[in-house]
Image (cartoon, rainbow, N blue to C red):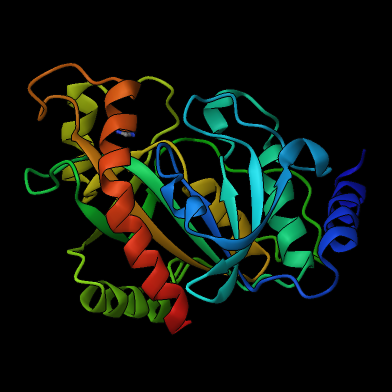
Length: 273
Ligand code: HPA
């Protein structure tokens, strides 16, 4: 299917299900952070397999459901499970869901992820509001022919993470009594965890946390005119700072521990939008 047919097909399928009144806010849940989805009320769950353009993640800890309902009484959609560049899907798999949601009128994309802390104070359990990112991966889902109807060839990345949304996240954190830090997210392609030398370099380049997601979605969302917010849940100190080898099991376990705090923050945040 050509890319615009895929977007039309996906949008038509979701419109058939939800009508024209699709929520304006979509929250993407990262590895092990599915807890927030359980707090959604009046939830209608659609498997990615039933939506053209939505591919299923192959990563443990990522189910593949779009959930539409209410969080703290506010209409939201939740993507439970995401596609990563390292899975080897074509870039369309990352691009299509976001453009489909944009076609349905979604205005804000709230991205969450699990990451490794690059600074000693970025300890496991830290919630880091993403201030900005560094794309150090060599991967960019916008590579290829550009459809000017969707967005410009050379999209601007000033305020990639919307300052107003960041301010509201800070306010929500205060009101929900959830401690947050702020920092720069480094996108590494993965799937291996980094070497200690890479981690020293990323820290020297000004990043505070490293992970394997979020940046591709941010690029696609900014390109098509959505506002983006990002919250990174630090699940471990990065290689060389950590005192033991890293594992995906540890990521999932630490993410699950922090998921409750993240859910409280998001509940308050959506009320402020
Ligand atoms: N590196 C990259 N991605 C991650 C990490 C890490 O240390 N922890 C969780 N996701």
